[in-house]
Every structure is written in C-alpha cells, then in structure tokens.
Length: 168
Image (tube, rainbow, N blue to C red; front, side, top):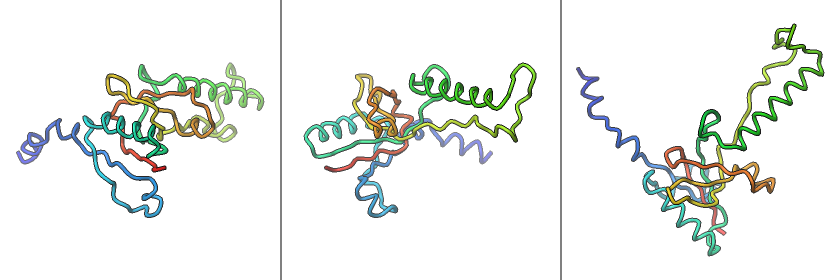
C-alpha cells in the first residue's frame, strides 16, 4: 500500500516542471563544481533563451549553448543525422568490401571488422533562434566549430538538460 501512496503523490507536473540548470560557462571553467547561476523550468526556457539571444545581439553574451537529447531514429530525426548515418554505413560497407567481405556468402566476423556500428552524435548545440512555437533551433557544436552553419536541429525544450552562456 505504501508504494501506491507514493505513486499517487507523484504527479506528471513534477516531471515537466523540473529545473534546468543555467550556467555561466566562464565561471564553470574556473571552478567545475560551480553552482548554476539559476534554474529554469521547461515552460520558461524559450523566453530565457530569447533573452540570451537578445543579449548576444547587443554583444553582452558571445555564445549560448544547450545540452540536449536529439532523436537518432524515427520522425523527429534531423536531416543531418540521417546524412551522417548514411555516410557511416557507406564507409563501413566500403571498408568491409576492401577487406574481402562478401555479404552474399560471408557472416560478419567481429574479430576481423570490429564493432564498427557505434556512431556518436553531438549533444551540445549552439542556439541560433527560437521558433514561434517555442522550439529551439540550434547547430551541433562540432559543425559550428568547423564553420558549417547549414546543419540545424529542432530541439524540444523538454529534451534540454543544461544551458550555458558565455559572456563577451
């Protein structure tokens, strides 16, 4: 009976109103154990990021980034992730063919080819804008650093784990 009481006390609102830490990246680099400047609710995140982007336009902040989960399968998958997966599959297939693998007759030899199926994606994104419906439009950090500004992910505020800003 105790577990039922605990379950009844737990509400869905608690999940959706959990706090997202917002850090000043400069302070965090000085002291990795620094506390967040403040915490934000998911429902407030779009407005806070809009304020940060306005501050960025004024030159008060140089960069706004978020740590977020982005789907790698299904309908919500960004196009750049689909492209990366396709390129990686082609690279693995070419590598296996060059080493004599024939998919018609051979089973995959893990000792020979290794487990080459792990593909890692960015979880850090540079915020570029906020859509009218409150979604975050952001560039994967690795592409941003390479100067490729064409890759954009649409991130739901519920998928954001942390927010960072860097003062100018």
